[in-house]
Length: 491
Ligand code: GLU
Image (cartoon, rainbow, N blue to C red; front, side, top):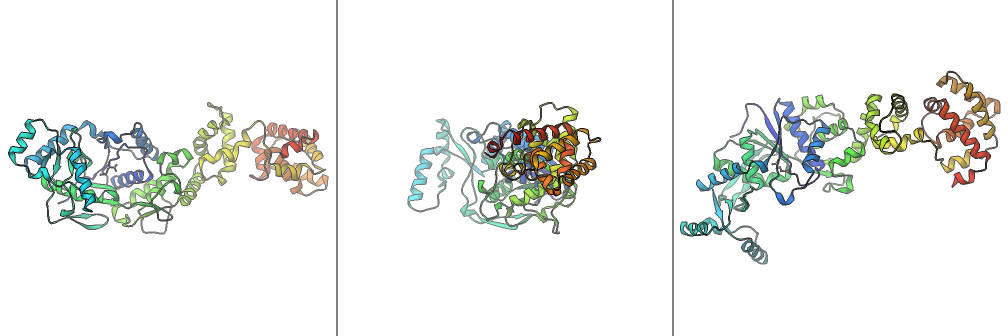
């Protein structure tokens, strides 16, 4: 039995055991897209019952990451740690119906059992000792207040079968599944109990999660059957591998999602990229808006083989989205990076913002990450320039350059309006008067005003920098040449 009608209700159910990974967030995104595609409800559920693995701050990071991507949740966050009585109730119900039992085995006994199994090269697992205790033995242990866990009594033979929406029918030999713990001795549920209980009471219609949970699913199916609960549709998303087909790790870039945020990926680009990480609309196309993805997304397009994480593609896609962004918005996104580098004040004036917009417009073409705004544009903002030694060596040593700088200074001083057209005409005229090529003026002037040998078009750059800044820089270059400081600048 499974839900096919009624409103779709899905959940993203992370464990707060550390900073979310790319794979976690991909699961959230697919689940969200599925909800939005079907006009359903997207629920955030924090699976925080493993107290030993709880990491402070990870709930915040999970929520920040979802918000950053625009994955808004309709319900929650629910915290499993606040629902303990419910899990116990379900566990006790299964004990009462004979589908579960109290196990009084001590951790020492279990440890010893494992050692023996390993020594005998047998599969490890609980030997079901307490499943077969007599009523008297049980009563005695309870009377003595012996601590216990509650284990599910798995069928000893047969197969558990379920339909996976992505992989089709999956079958598991029951004999290979052990009597797993549902409720721990401290009263906390394990993942299996809490997950099935919540999925039932929260009315979850589709369980969408990573492929690593497939092996848990036959246990869940057995619990649903024992409880007489309607089963959700299960959909296990493919794992994510690096371009070398190995498990995703630091080698392939970051695995922690927040690092991508910090490096300056745009949420729109990340959204698009993640959507294609294990799903395809079966068309020759890579760029989709959020709305287009909502329209197209469905479980039928999810791959049943691993998805390949290609960091170069992500970078390319980010560049595309950066160039698509209106310059005011792009500047707003770049501002924190400029501020952190000390290039912009914490409360910039409208003029300063306007200047940054014009600077960024010149460099956006070359930007693949927001954080690159700093190396790409810092020379526009700094009071004193750092000169590229090779530019200084090549151009500031030319005999005509001091005179050229003097001429430019004199002409620019009186140039009105100081605009692209006038700047270009004036600069070219200086070349002509000196009897050198335009390039022989453009290159040293570029070094003088930017410190660099490459960059955006010189005349555009000069126009954006503005008269005052340009004159100051031309004078500083002239001064440097005259005072014989070249050797120093050459380093
Ligand atoms: N808490 C599990 C996780 O961290 C959830 C698995 C599931 O979705 O059932 O991935």
